[in-house]
Image 1 (cartoon, one colour):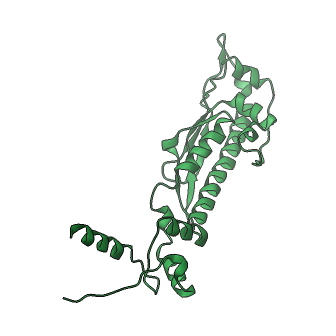
Image 2 (cartoon, rainbow, N blue to C red; image 1 turned 90 degrees about the vertical axis):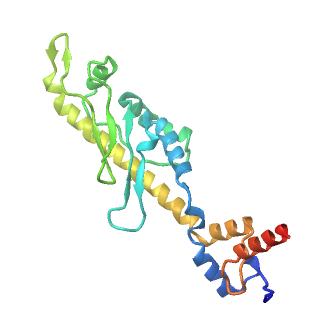
Length: 225
């Protein structure tokens, strides 16, 4: 039987090189769980101030530093509320410092009463494409009929409205991806990883190798004896 005495150190007790090794080894410490959940909730709440009801289980992303990375989300949209919210910058009631390059739609304003009176079905959607990380939109309008009369002349305006909604959706999608990327970068930063290791009382050998399992093993043996 051999007995080995080994000194273990907290992160702050390590020398510079050992700290670097510990940080590199535990770089993913803060992202080994559903770290994105708070960002999803924040995005959902922000969009609600715009009349956009985001479906949480339809939010998706892949990131962050490879070709093809991106995000997408699906939502139902209240067009009239969205236009009003943009005019009033209503999202700032939730996020006062957040700026968006939104514009109101450049369409014939006679379209809006048709939406308000449900002559135009007000069921537009933002859709997360199944095979790609971006969004498309669908106004959900096919036939426009009022008292047996079809309003064919408004389709040009509806095309403009749909293009406007697509622009809004893309701006929001870029915002979603950016917030996820920033949070991921922070969680993987030296500052965040160090803080987590200190809070969880991680222990290391002198050269920066993780030794928590040794401490746990010692506690187990003491308990068994």
